[in-house]
Image (cartoon, rainbow, N blue to C red; front, side):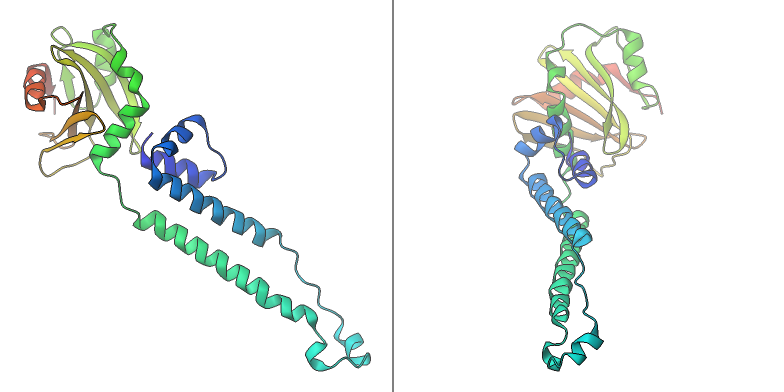
Length: 236
């Protein structure tokens, strides 16, 4: 699960935490803080909406009773408290919106690794996929793979940053390699990264978009991409 997917779930229902979201929150302090803030804002809004309004006494009765003007409307003293609560709720809303819009955006590499972690079982697949299944996963992505020469053990279409993208695992002599075709992500230059026990490359595609190639451990990513290049073909 990516940061964006987690925060969409939190924003929709701050008090509900499913298994996938709980797993993400256990390793993401930023989303955990966001969940706490959204839960607090939701609680404050609920208190404001269901708070009973103070009853104003009949001023004519108060006047006839001879109560001094300073004491005639005790309910009026409740209005500043209600205003303070409303102001605090508005501040909470403003902080929540500001946190959502101005929060540090996770890098593309972090998003890719987060998605791969959510599908970590893909690394252990050993049964080769059929050529038809691989082609179906790559359909419309602008990439073709020679399934006869490359052993694909995992081929899915996954939701990533709001778009459906191909997610493959290819067996190589150096071990399994994950390949994701990100047509809607654009980079100015190639990026290499090592994080959380993974090595990866983000490669700008010739016709736009990005190719993500990830291996486990301290892999030689240049060698990995050289091994993959003969089997990958950009169709447009």
